[in-house]
Length: 146
Image (cartoon, rainbow, N blue to C red; front, side):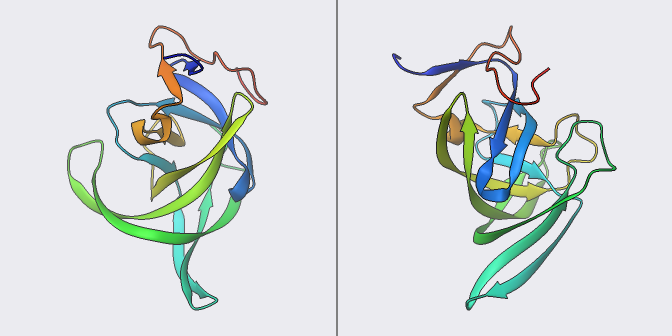
């Protein structure tokens, strides 16, 4: 367990490969794959490859600021939503930065309008790197943390 970062049940991180400088995420060891909020998305072709363009509100409790992102689609996967109902979601890969460390993670794109956090950090993104202290929040100092 040495050299693993300890995080709280919610943290602020960034997704630099998507141009997202700061986003608050709920840390969820019960979720296999991370999920990112998008209120609108569309598939398109780029260099004969399937890509996804999506629009999101990355700032907590702020629907005025809109960011557009693009990423290559790596999969379409059946995922159980928060209500336990399976749905097919686009899966992308993006670099995540937290606590001064950056690594690639898989992220599903979903409408999280009814969720408190715009991003959910799942356990595969944390594997081998992160330990969760559920009694704490915002342990990692970063831009935009509360």
